[in-house]
Length: 230
Length: 351
Image 1 (cartoon, rainbow over the protein chains, first blue to last red):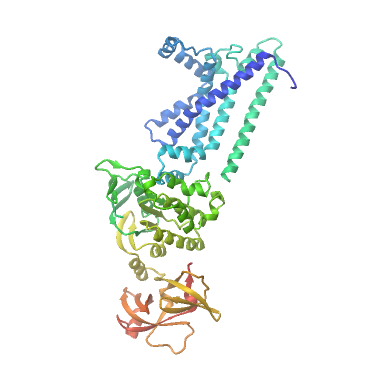
Image 2: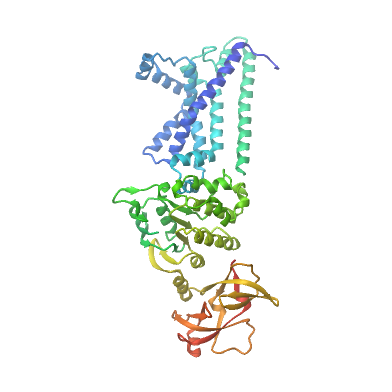
C-alpha cells in the first residue's frame, strides 16, 4: 500500500461500503416495482406518486434526514411502535442505510424507468400473445431487456450512497465505528486542527472508490451489450 | 374455426366498427393503411380493449362487455405475427422459437418443434443470435414462434410489408407450407391484393374503420381489373422446367408454356398480367409470341372500357383483359372458342 490509514479510517471505509451495498440491494426490488408501476401500470394519481419518489432528489438531504428523524423518532407512532418492539434504528447503522436508501432511491428508479420505457412495446405484446402472464413477461422480457439500465441505476445509487452526508448525519449521527462513513470522517478531520492531510487521504480513497464503481459499471455494461449482440 | 366479431371502438373522430363471422381457414382483411385493420388485430388479440361488443372464438367468449368478459392476451390462444419480427433480442433463435411452446399446456401442443423447424428450414439457425439474422430469416423464426404456441387462430398483421420483393416471395412458400401442413386457421391482414390472392380464400374489405364488403379473394382481384389501372394478375403454378432452345418449357396442368425465365424443380409461381394475354379469333399464322393456346370463354365480366374474359385452357384458367370493341369484333361470348397468345417474356417469376 502506498499509504496506510489509521484503523478508524479503515472502519469508515468498511462501513461506507456496507451501508452503500445494503442500501442498494435493499432498494432494488422496490426500485424495480416502482419503475414497473410507473411505466406499465395505469394508476390514478401517478404524477403524485412520481413526485413523491423524486422529492429526495430535489430536497436538501438535511431536510430528508430531519423528516426521517421525525418519522422514526420517539414522538411518532412508528417510533413508539419500534420502541415497544425494542428495535432501535436511530443512531445505528440501520439509520445510515435508511438515509442512503431514501436519498438514492430516485436515482435508481429514474434509471430503471428510462430503461423500461425504451423497450419496444411489441416485445411485450409478442410475449403476452405467446402465452406469458404479466409476471412471466416481467421476468423473461422486461428485466433482461432493461439489464443495463438496472445496472446503471444501481451504480448511481451505490455511488450516491458512498457520498451521503446530510441525511445520514441527522438520522444516524457521527459515531466512529458505528455510523461514521467516509464523508462524515472527512468532515470530522476538517474540523480537527491538523487533520487536513488525513482528510485529503480519505478524499483520495473516496475518489478511488467512486471511480472504481464507474469502471466496474462500464465493464459489466459492455459485457451485457456484447451478449445482446449489438 | 368459427370467429364471431362485433366490436366498436372510438378514437376521437375515428371510429372502428366491425361485425362479421368467419368460418373459413384462410381469411383475409384487406384495406388501405389507416383503415383500422391493425386496430382490429389488436382488439382480437386482447392487446386493445374495444369500447363495446363481443368476440367469440370457437364458441368461447374472449370479450363481451355485456357480461364483463375481457380475457387477457395470454388466455385467448390467438397467435400474432407482426409486421416486423420482434424476436426477443436477448434470446437465440431456439429460445425464441420455444418461448410460446413452453408456455402451452402439454395437451394443447399439437405441433412438434422438430417438424416445424424442418418445414421452415431453421435447423442451421437454431444457435444463432437473432441480431445476426436477415429480415427474411427473422420473419420465418417469428412465424415459427407463433405457430409453435399452437394457437386456435393466427393473425398475420402485414407480415410481408417490411420485406423487399425478393424476400417476400421467399417467405410465401414457407407460409403456405406451414398453413397447409399444420392446418391452422389464419386471418391474414394486408393492403396487398396479390398477398390476398396468394394467402386467402375469402376477404373482408375494410375502409375508414368499417367493413365495406366481403367476397372471395378471386372476386376481389377481378374487381380490381375493372377499377384498378394494373389489371388482374393471373397466378400460375408451373412445374418441370426443361430447356427449350434458349428458352424454358414448363408444364402448366395439361398444357405446356414457353418462358424466358428459368425455374427450379418443384412449384414455380409466375405472375401473368391480364393485359399480356392477346386474344385471336382464329389461329394466327405467324406471331412472335411463343405461346398459342386454344381456349374456351367461360365468363365475361366488368363494364366500362375494361372487360375481363375468363378462359378455360385445357384445364388451366386465365383471365384476359380486353376492350368492349374487341368483344364485339371477335364476337366473344360464353362458350366461344378463342386463341390466347402470350409472349414468353410476359411471365414474371414470383418464386
